[in-house]
Image 1: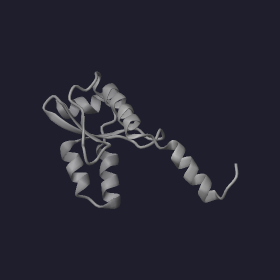
Image 2: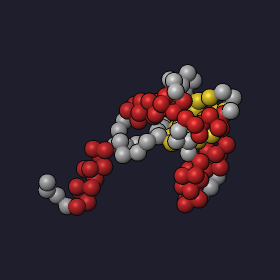
Image 3: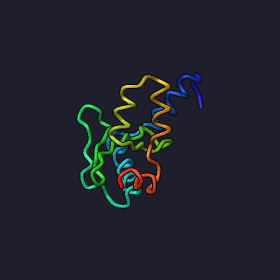
Image 4: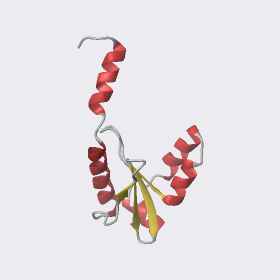
Length: 112
């Protein structure tokens, strides 16, 4: 494997990055496992291509598709996503870590 370290890192990152279509498909599968069925109304934002919105019960959820295979999608309530959007750097990251919905039981607790 030739080239400088920087060139090798750039090449690794290019290989890991997925197309928007692949990212969205992976996120859709993640959400399907999370809610226990395929999401009926998942739609993707036209401006923020890896941000999706759906409803579970009366609750709006926001899905952030991961750009690479090393990460899973992030699912938040719309209220929590709004809090993230208005926070800065490390505070936003902390909110995502604390409030991301990772399993079906957590989701059920939120949507009642």
